[in-house]
Picture 1 (cartoon, rainbow, N blue to C red):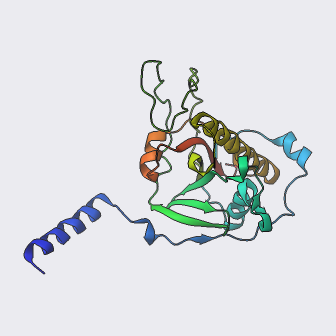
Picture 2 (picture 1 turned 90 degrees about the horizontal axis):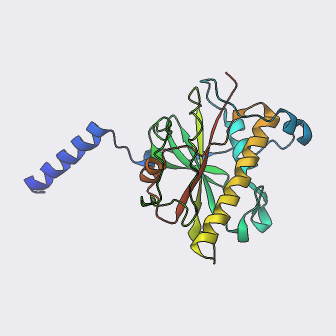
Length: 244
């Protein structure tokens, strides 16, 4: 081993330590618990109390609650057919649920009912934004924005008043659709994300957990962190936690 190679290794270790770059493989997968399908309010009562939260306790979600909310969102309910609790255009399962918690970022594997590690570190506060820049007709759209649909002109809602213990990001990979134009794949992905979002909201209403669907977030930061491509669309986020 020559001196130049040793010097390179030393510099690399210094860089990693200085900037706290930690590979995802240092995180272990989280095997989720079997969902408790007997819990929660009856459907109509859940609708009666459903509301968007703005404050959360600092208490971390326990594993059972995290397991149940992910299964309710888009878990396998007919394993033999690979069908889930959320409908999906052409059964493409195009929407991934990325889970941001204090120790890292995970993605929900619906087939194994577990969280797979993506990135170590706490990025929850970094992915939220108060007021994203408004695009103009002449300005190029960032990668991953709708291909032909005008974005809303109204300002986004204000950020949550407190930081939730969990941030769930719903991202559609349009390449999973076996056919369809770019515009149609975007539309299908948006619909699929909305169905999952409603499942999250209804589960939380039925169990007393607090959430709200939000479109306002730092999409470019999320795209960079998760190394997304132009075929990925970042649609919605759900802050989730217990009542404050």
